[in-house]
Amino acid sequence: MKKAQDLNYQLHHLCIYDDRPRDSMWSYLRWHHGITNYFSGDVFHVTGEGHSDYTFLGCGGRAYQIQIEAPPFQFEYERNWWSRHGRGYNHICWLTSDARASMEQLLANGATEVMPFEEFPTYDGFVVHDPEGRWIEIMEYTDDTFRVQEFTNAPSGECGLQMIGNAEICDDLDAMVTWYQDVMDMRVLKEFGSGSDRTVYMTDKAYDPQERNSVFILQGARHAFEKQHREAHGPYISSIVYQAQDLQRAWDDALWAGMEALHEPAVDEVTGALTGYLREPCGGNSIMLRERFAA
Image 1 (tube, one colour):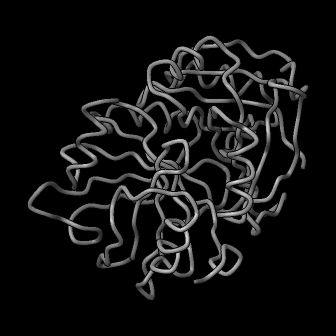
Image 2: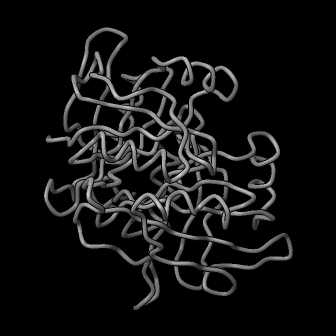
């Protein structure tokens, strides 16, 4: 069996489930985003159960993106999730160099199957739960030319906005940091706080602060909106994470674009970084907007 270090896991996208993506994405487009790809039909997969409707958007970063997926969805397990949770952040996807070997490796190390390994027209992939129940998608490109388009790693708009990753709310922070280190070869960039109020910034081995600055944040629920969502849905994918060169301008631009204020920008007691939180229009989950992060 291959080890995590042999599978070249790289953060790729966060998937949002939304039944009105053409309306909701306008707030992202107005907030300095661009559409990198729109996919439907045979590019991905069409079954008798449903079809694919995927729109990928990026903002200022080279690799990490959001994917908005709309009903009726392809598979029963997706529709079951939709019936329980509705609009929300559904899964995080990692690229790998060997999806079949990855399936074996993850299931042998505490993951549980959601969607079995399948070969699609342009990629191979599967979906599992991490030990706390969040969905992980693994994807291996198999077509010589097919790729989700990447932007150059350059801040977007006058505010210098960049989407850099996502955050998750954990029940057992230490256990999940260890699991993502040991089982998916994630590395700790920086840890903030002490005791129960801690935030851990992680990434994959392809991280580069100038050219590929994708991060993966694990933390406990501290804000009221996080605790409320945790109570209703369990451990969950909590925020898309952005950084900005001019945070106040980025905040003002977000409100103008259609995001809603959840927590006004203030110095975070744990990280020491100027940070604000917004509610986004697709999943109804949160956006973390912070000053520039330096590992």
